[in-house]
Image (cartoon, rainbow, N blue to C red):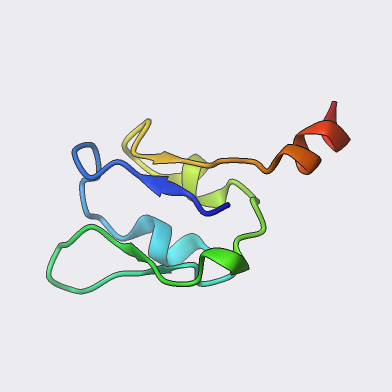
Length: 71
């Protein structure tokens, strides 16, 4: 399951585009909300959520099988 970007909270800084090790996000240089271009590539590493300067702008939905393994 891909991350969700809250367009109202996103400050369009591009941090998620630059930090994602799997290039899940695509951003433009025109200060727009990044697009999630490769949702199936997301490893759920949480890097985008941790490094985003605006708390709550990105939410990561962890698939149920992964939740069960971590408990």
